[in-house]
Length: 73
Image 1 (cartoon, rainbow, N blue to C red):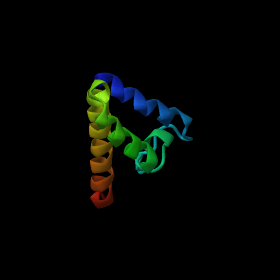
Image 2: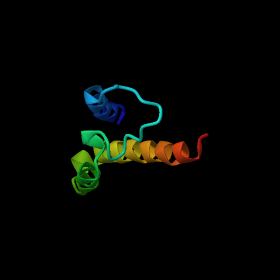
Image 3: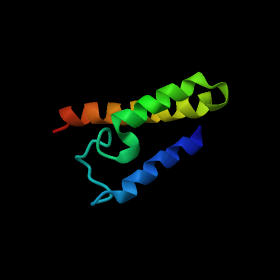
Image 4: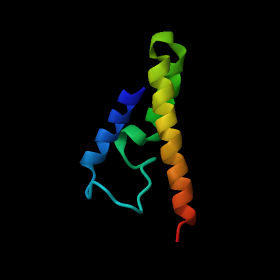
């Protein structure tokens, strides 16, 4: 499941690579809603279930970060 953190390599394509005010959900290619849906579909296959759980957990935490970013002043 730790290897699912490699999904953040898509951040390297952004300019600037890091922006404290940017929500990664919906911005980076592997953080788009169709990709998140594909991660959910991976839950069907038992051999890919841990990877899917890791990716969905990653997206949930990024989404939570975006949520809190709205209320950060």
